[in-house]
Amino acid sequence: MLEPVKLANFFIVFFSAASVILFGASYALLFAWSRLKSQPRLLLVAYAAYGGLVFSVITLALAANLFNTGFWAGIVLLMLVGYLLAPHFIWQLCVGTHADNGQPLKISQQH
Image (cartoon, rainbow, N blue to C red; front, side, top):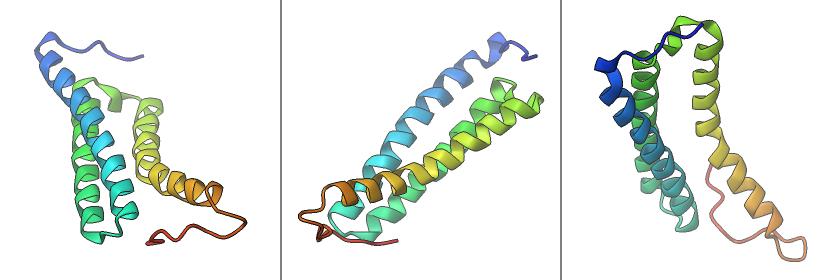
């Protein structure tokens, strides 16, 4: 069973949860922008945003006592892997579905 968040940790939980949203959105936006504009340097900034996301998620999980049970620790790990891989899969899906007459789009295909 999960322990409730201590009142002293309320601000840590609040700001780390907000950071999860901001860093996750920044990672997805910078990833897509780097692919659209063929700018690999933006991809490095996107991965830096992902690093901030990882830090925020771990801070949130520690403050909210999520690492006390294996189930919630697994959910945290699954979320981090999903945040890392989802933009890659979504990009491939978009390139594949927006192909013209069976020809792939002429957009950077960096890996």
